[in-house]
Image (cartoon, rainbow, N blue to C red; front, side, top):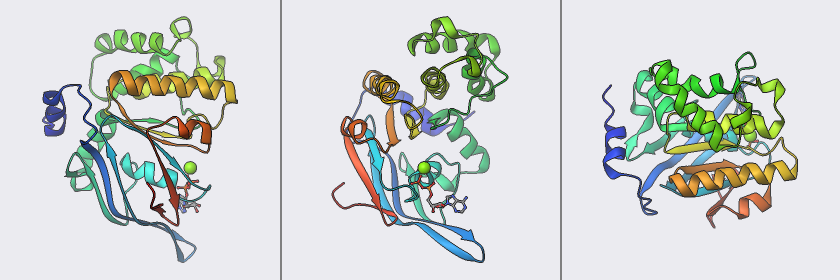
Length: 244
Ligand SMILES: Nc1ncnc2c1ncn2[C@@H]1O[C@H](COP(=O)(O)OP(=O)(O)O)[C@@H](O)[C@H]1O
Ligand SMILES: [Mg+2]
């Protein structure tokens, strides 16, 4: 499959350039229809994410953090405004192009892991590889290496219900990494964990950011965790507060 974005990324190698904008929002507006009226969630939001950085997105519950992450991940469309992914207008892509972006360029980690309950940890991690068109024999080794990396070498054959909350989130992180995304969108990834497990999960995300140069945008309510990221963006009234 032709994917000029992917080729550009491969040519540029693994180097992290902090002045290299990977994703930006310009005048982003999102309204939801509600009982004949409209809820105005994003109200002309602007922000930029540099390749290789880890940015916290904070703000009161209901302010629109998940809405923004969903749009950056092409799970939803903006009402108005533009999202640029590596200088390309993301929503100018065809549906197939957007599907390819979701499968290859971006990884998601949610508060509740959304693992498939009938499948083992290993099968859950393999899944995005199969959906991306790779053969089972080609993806198994990579999935095993990822599960080992997140500390679950001995748990690969377990189903989600047989794992702790922190372990389930580790599987979700391995799954998000499966197709080697350059951006990970994490929506309150530690929100469902006690503080000990939350710290360990954040350590893992930070290590992936530093060693692989994966860019992260992480919605969180946890101030201690937000402080450990490179920058903190606070959403107020549908925009990023000025000091960001
Ligand atoms: N699909 C939807 N339809 C209608 N309203 C929605 C929908 N999704 C989110 N909202 C509303 O948009 C606002 C922002 O939600 P959300 O992005 O989930 O906020 P946050 O993640 O910051 O808590 C909330 O008022 C929420 O009720
Ligand atoms: Mg949310």
